[in-house]
Amino acid sequence: MHPQQSPSQTYLASVAARLAADECQTWWEDWGGVPVLVGRRSDFRLRWMGTKLHLFTVAAAVPEITMPTIGTFTFQAMEYAKRTKGGLPAGLQTGIGVFPVLVSDRVDPAAVQWAEAQARNEWAIMARPVVVDSARQYVGTFRRRGFIGSGYASHLIKKSRLYFDGQ
Image (cartoon, rainbow, N blue to C red; front, top):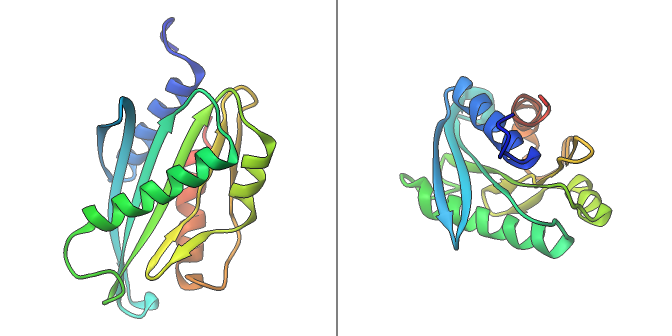
């Protein structure tokens, strides 16, 4: 770890490396003064009824994570993915998966519980919020099959483990 780098920044750098190793396009954006890591990949599977899944990872380090913080960030990441995806509209042989990721050393346990409780879904877009407590090295996210988007569940669980579980 660089002497000036916080555990949250170190974690984000490791996520960026894992995304790149999985052949995701990665870049950084400024969201209102907050550096945000974005990773993107697209996968096509016949078993998904011949659809393509556009998977976005949107991650940021913040001073503190509360339920409202992760809820708002999840909504912003979903809207960002819908605007950025391009191509056919979501739902027409294409879906969107989003990992909205917040990292902090100050985490409200209720925010972790919220992230672990369920995926957040809208029409043709599935979000699995990720809350990372960098002080405790704990990653909280939904890792089960939900009813909506169940065909993509094993893919999302696999990618979640690949991107977020390596400390």
